[in-house]
Length: 422
Image (cartoon, rainbow, N blue to C red; front, side, top):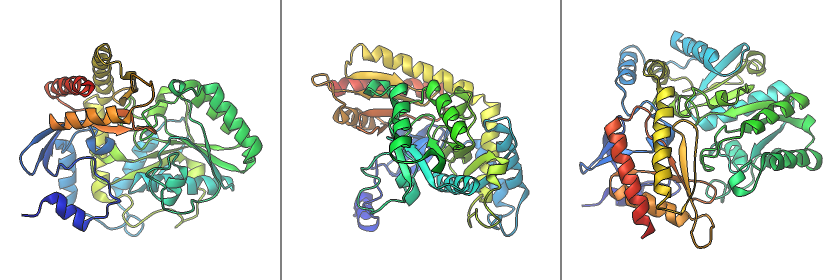
């Protein structure tokens, strides 16, 4: 009998990478069962998509109710009230004490593409500044903005022009806030006139780049630079949004309001939905028909998103994220006493990471991080690695994870790190 892996290899492009060979059969909250009946604790959440857990009852109920009414009309042809209402809710919730408007699309990359379109239309400028290590999607503009070549840009030819990168401030890797700001100043002096820059885009916590939080001093300085030069500030909250960092949006940690916010992933609890929310006058810059998409704001995703926002508020998931993240970081700190490979433990709320170096060379060790991941997988815990050097394990369990399942996962994590040392 042909295995599922063999069938996958024969049928699906190898460009679609797979972290595991687990083929899901069913899932509930923070647990997944595969086709053979094996149980796994999910510390990936579909890459930060199910902050409210797999199949949260309120999300499922909302989608079932919508299924009984209609599944698609295309809001640009026959609009629906739920789309309008969700836009109203996001306009009220997104950072910034000013009038806002929202558009809905389908993926995070599409949200980023549209944020760039809106920024260019609003400013009449072309250039965009992003940061090394940042991740903004796999479309061509997303690839251009992403500050990592392998595997995202290899073999795909020329990227869109007028995209520039500055170093992201990471003290652990020898780049201070002052150095990053100085590099941005040099960029404006040597490569692109700030009067040509439409927007600066940044993740409040780098996701794929290694879960490095932006220092508040840097975010405030970016806001000042943008205001000085008439540049728009785009916060890419695709991975950081919806209670993951202990706030509904990570920008709230800095008390800095971006001009545009991109969001996706956990917005709809597992259903495809993304959005751009921003200053009303900026969002209105493109003409009618310049924004949109056939599936943008699909009714099922809209219904799910309403339920997600309700669950976050009712179950106090921002507070829960802080509690879980505190417990995880405390446990990792205790493990660090026995595992000198751990060089850093970080992250706001429940958007946490642990970074590993080789104890002999003190250089980043992707090998050690991957050993931990594979040992944990054998024991029933799904982990994800990330980082420019591949030496970071990121933790993205559902914020709704049960206490007893969380405790079980921490035990597996500790055992896996210690076994990896051997």
